[in-house]
Every structure is written in C-alpha cells, then in structure tokens.
Length: 428
Image 1: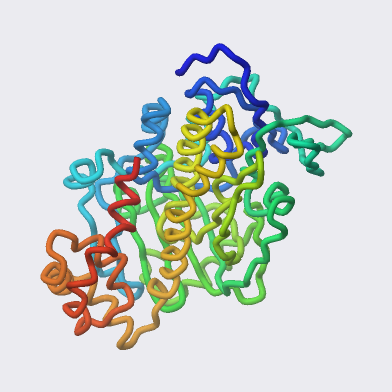
Image 2: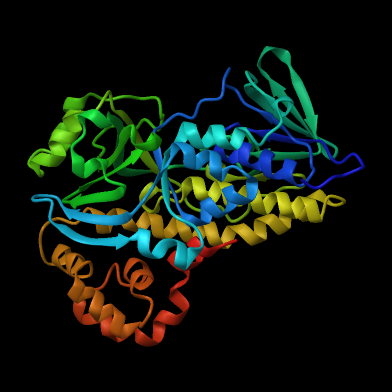
C-alpha cells in the first residue's frame, strides 16, 4: 500500500456493493482514505452467481483478494458451452483449461456474489464502511457535497463517488433521471444444491442452453456446493426491476416447457427463484460533474449476456483509484480523466451485451440455423480463413449477425473489430 503523509480530500462512496467496496479497496491500496455509506444494516450481496473473467481476476490479484476468492470459487475448465434447447446437443465450447491463462494471464472462475463481496470487503478497513445510512438527499455547497441520510444524519465530502446502483441518487442528482426502456425480457435466478444436481451441471463448466425466445445459463459456485441458474424469457407484463422479487419453480418451469428433460429436471431441483425485469438504459455520455462521478451499474448498467457487469465495476474502481492517486491535488480533473478512460470501453460493452439478446433467442429457422453454423467446426473454419488467429473473438463479435456466405466478405474489416473479447480479457 502507498503511504501518504498529508491529508487528502474527504471522499465519500455511496453504495457498498461490489463496485463501491472495490473503489474503497483500491483507494486504500493507494494510501487514500474513503468512507463507504451503505443503506443496508449489513453487507450482503443480493443475487447468486457470477463469472469472474480474466480481466476481473487480474484486478482482484492486484488488490490482494484473488486468493480469498479462489477458496470459494470454481475454476472453469470449459466456458461458453452452447447447447441446443430441444436435445441438449453441444454446438460449441471453449477449452478454458488449455488456453485461458496462456492467452489472458489469468483463469476464469465462477463464484457466488456474496463470496466475491466478502473477499473485496476484507481489503477495506472496517472503520471505512458505515452501514445503515440511506441517502435521502444530496446538495452541492460551494465545492463540497452534503449527503443527507435518514434519521437526520449528514456528512460532507470533497469527492463523491456514486456506486448506488441502477436507482442511483447520485446519478439522478448529477445528470437527471435516466429513463428506462422496457426490454420485453425478464430474468430468473436460482441455486440448486450440488447433491440435487445432475453430473453434467456440476462440471466446472459454464453452459448456455439457447432456444426460441429464451436461454438459460448454469455453472457451479461456492466451491461446487451449488449450481447457479440464470435464465431469460419474455417478460409479459412483469416489470419489476427489484433483485428481491421472487417467482415460483412452476413459473420458471413453464417458460422452458418442451425443452430437454435434463434441463427441466435441473430447474425442478432449484430453490425459490428470483425474478426481475431487464430494463434498458442508453449509455451515458458523461459521468462526472466537478468533484462527483459514477461507477459500476450506476454509470453503465448492462445486460448480463457477456458476464461483464461486475468485472467492469471492478475495472472502474481500479482506474478511478489510479487517477485520483496521480491527481489528488486536482480531484475534478482526475475524475474527468477517469471518465475519459472508461466511457468508450463500457459503452462498447453495453452495446454488444444488448445485441446478444437477439442472437441467443432466435426461433428455429434459417436465421437460427445460420447462427448455429457459426458455432460449429465448419463455421469456425470459415471464420478462421477470414481472420486467421482470431476465430473466437471474431465469431463472438463480428459475425454474430452474418450468414455463412457473408463470413468471407469481411476479411479486410476484421482488424479494427477484434477489440471486444481480446481487449476485455487482457485489459490492465
């Protein structure tokens, strides 16, 4: 940790989730004090599993939290294993055990959100986290922010970091309310105890079942004690964005009626599912105003189809801490630099994550057959001929909307379009 001998600006972080605690931890690593204000009476990450891709693992290693994460995580041998909805036929998979560390310098893991949160929390001084403080108002007084909390409490800060999620008070104060668009999709999530899960779901693999209007992802978490399920389906008139809303197993099953029996048996073994609507928000063009900025879902909420939401919040935190460390004498300028460094990357990821909803949910027919072709060895060969050495990155980014006949027409265009996957996983 960097030692500092002079007092710095008062830094307040609103929100004690993965992004907010990561910001506090990386600032602490730079020798900069910050206080996290969290409205909940205790720290507990709502939700279930997530994928920790190499770009997130790299930052967690720098933070000193990766070893703790690994004790409770599952290192994946197989990733992006696509299966056909009706019969479970494997369309494509990636051998992460053989290639991930060689290509990206880290492995890919799956973990329960609570375990990741606890590992990051361990890198933050206990006195830096203040619980039970629900923000009810923000006011800029001169160059300082006054935070008003329930029960009449208040605090002041020279630097304010909004990490308070999609319903952010900081974002609404800075840039105005961000209207959400109804996406027409909802998500189900559930955990299945390992002893109730079939062998194929307990493997160290991230599996995606894709079919008409729906898809379901499963992988083991909590050192293999549970299998995490997250599924996406038409929302109908369901519009609640709350992660605490629930459904029934019967409602979950009904969405996957007629799918492979192995998958429906897995759903039947689940505990009470959560359910929330996916609401769409356009990327913001600015995150910063004076001494205040945004981070994580507060700045760039994204659909979960690339598994980069938590990773991007952790990256935000690392970049923000470095910018403030290098520019502590001028925090507004440091925050503008952070914004300029991060917005292009997160905007690109928001955009491509949104686009996956169409590809994953194609009905049976010519377009679905073309998408399936791109996952097969023959499709991979065609892409390899168009862009040697970049088959995986190109297939996921460039060719997701093309027919097989169009694959070879883009050879000259691929060079500038390989940034998403490779850059995402290699980013420092």
